[in-house]
Length: 129
Image 1 (tube, rainbow, N blue to C red):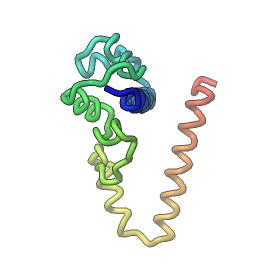
Image 2 (cartoon, rainbow, N blue to C red):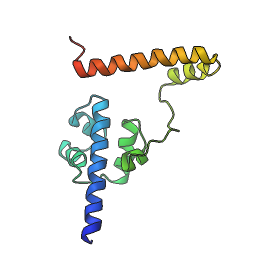
Image 3 (cartoon, one colour):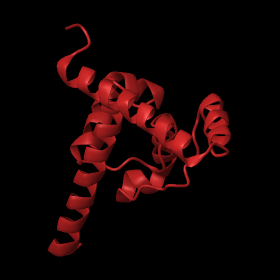
Image 4 (cartoon, helix red, strand yellow):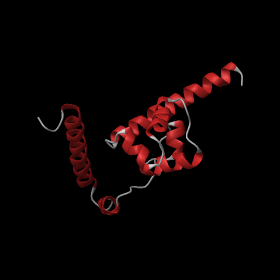
């Protein structure tokens, strides 16, 4: 493998590892917790997140499933807007909201945005304060 290909592979693995780590942290899981969920050793998951190794295809599929994302996003960072909601209750409510007047939809969107912001702030400052 020539040097250019090796450098490109290293960059891809590093970016993959960063996305994997970020998704794991969004779930508030430790590396050991995620490793258990996909049945790999902690040390192996650490190598994935560090960009030292790539998981085999079947583990990529498992990772995408437990992290509620796509293999495409894990590998390329391309977000697939067609990924369905995994909560049937949320999906039912969003479908119902599509029939609302635009002003009512906007009010619900603002409420959701406020809740998301609250959650992020609590995550930064800790909910215990």
